[in-house]
Length: 339
Ligand code: TXA
Ligand code: MG
Image (cartoon, rainbow, N blue to C red):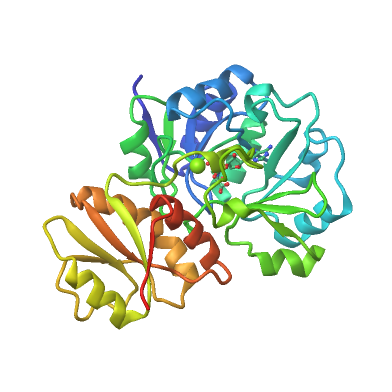
């Protein structure tokens, strides 16, 4: 298949919408990461997403809508808490899980009785939902298991020849995937941290549970609340090792481990004193910048043939929790704590 590369020009967006209507796969920009979209109500089109990504069939997809009114036919009931969250954070990087209606094909929900829905804020994503007239099922547009793409050229690296088109909308603003909250349980449960933080959610709906899998490996024998938690995730070819400590301790530690193919992934302004190659991913206290850069910098490690990346560990406050969660998985939960 020859992949078409489209811009945000009106004629290109119309072309992308026509492809989506015809059941084809189109990668689209969102404010979080690029998504690999298909008509969410077309089971065959949705099945093709799993094939293109190499995604396990039991990992359900998020359905993207452009207006709250489109939500009503996708879920069986919208509780007041869900409406309050939609009012506060939609359009934006928040995904809500509720019991689904029969309109949702099994391919989307992967056999679960619930469906995840989000209203993105990116103008191109919204325009494509409107032009195609379809809610769009879209996982991140990477091959399964590796870092999510935040630029169109990264989508091309993974998907060229496997999908009908890529729409280039520049660099994604947020940089990590949406916050996922399950509202089908009491209390509501955070399944994946993102730019809408625990503090922001709590301020609107009160107490929420944070699933153990957010910061811990899934315990063997326990079912994943979110099937995506079971799988290796976000990992470049390079081995990522998180290192928890202050600037000086980090520099001393990585310098002592200097070798061919070893690099540091550190905070902006904390590179002084490093005697090995380094990449920076935002200032220590700037969690939004870290989120914006983290996936791109993980992909750069492989471009530069890094074997081992000692990575300065982000804090778990605010949006930092989302960055920590992604890096922890990229590192296969390997964390070195310096005294
Ligand atoms: O920001 C985002 O959410 C991006 C953009 C493209 O919108 N999409 C995204 O999709 O990250 P994906 O498929 O890479 O991650 C969706 C996560 C997976 O971990 C999946 O297991 C979980 O949401 N999920 C989807 N539906 C679910 C459901 N019904 N119950 C529990 N978890 C669900
Ligand atoms: Mg993903």
